[in-house]
Amino acid sequence: MQEDSWKKDSKKLLDYMSKLSKGGNKQGLAYRFLNAVKSKNKSEFEWLLDRLLIANAGEHKELVQEIVRIISHYPLDYSENLERIGHIIVLGLISGNANSGGEQNE
Image (cartoon, rainbow, N blue to C red):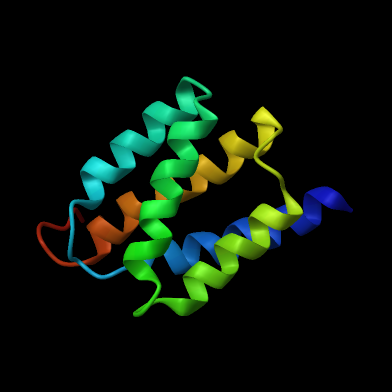
């Protein structure tokens, strides 16, 4: 049951993340998130997450609300949750870059 819930939540978060606007350095942010996840650096991950929430609070309120909701259900105190949430954020940032114009592979 928990796994089904996680699948729905992760899909929703990925959808929100991929809709972020073109602005900012999403590729650099994705790289920093990935490093924090790989090193299991919870404080760096939380700092990056805080920056992401602040930067998108006005334009993407649904994203902010979804991230807050997911973190309340899947606490970052568990490294498995940090990895899951982190990978979804990285994937969303990267896929948002791919979908926002530029070169497209066919």
